[in-house]
Amino acid sequence: MSELVTGEAVVLGLRTARLPSRALARLLDWTVYTVAYFILAVGLMMGLSELEEAAQMAFMIAVLVFCTVLLPTLVETLSQGRSLGKIALGLRVVRTDGGPIRFRHALVRGLVGVIDFGLLAMPAVLSSLFSAEGRRLGDIFGGTMVIRERLPQGARDQGAVPPVPPQVMHALGADLVALDLSAVPDGLWLSARQVLGRMHELDAPVAAALGDRMAADMAQRTGWPVPAGLPSLVYLGAVLMERQRREWERASAAAYAAYAAQLAQQQQHPQPQQQPAPYGAVPAQAAPVRQLGYPQAPQPGAVALAKPAEQPAAAEATGGGGFAPPA
Image (tube, rainbow, N blue to C red):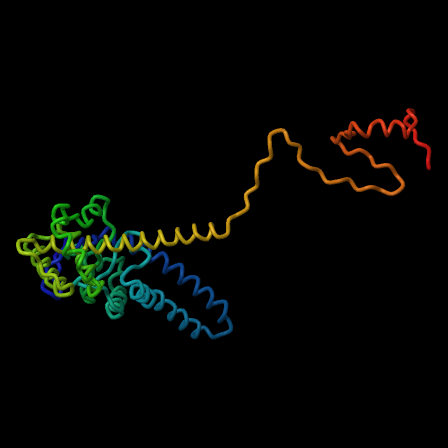
């Protein structure tokens, strides 16, 4: 745990990364940058084979500088301190006050990294071992440090915002419902969540000071002062839970409206449903097509049934012998 002092003179505790995790992250990054260097080098050698040897050597040096200094600098700047190896191990580079790094911090780290990781990386190893926060020379000159973002399951559970007791929420119910939370910025919500989620990591005086400061800011934004006798952290938790309740109701109303619209559309345009055929019914078959000059062959499975009233007439027409002379 490292104690960092923010610009507001508030002491924060952050989990700094140690030498083994940083070394493994650096090894992953070095592997990726080495592969990128060889790909670019082979491409340049194939494309610039007609140039002189000195020009080819200059291009190779430029590619080496790009993959060693500029590429890590761009990656850490655009990702705000997270390279591929740091993402894999849950690490991040931050300023010594806990804020995100800028281009100049990443550039200083990249330039001094040439010294850090030269001579079998002995300068980086020695400086990390003798530093209380595990900082290498690039971190010392750049004003940065590497912290752990990914916490174990137990730490993640402890970092959740503790719920406010139901009796307190019931006592503050009327005031909370009448609050106007539209003037509270997102940064204040995030700060309140972080402070409430890390109450177990902070000292009691530090947590109380942070709670009083944020509660005063929240009261100024919402127009609802902290009730007498109510701790500032409980006040922040109650306001935060009210915001979550409103967001849940808004999301539920939107989902219900979408479902109601879909149901109304189905009622306006119902899909035709086929009635089931009665038990034992034979499906209707298409009428056979007659061919001129030839008798129609019986269809398979079809049985010709004559009506009872037509059987005597057919027998008289054939003379009882089953043969009808042509007319």
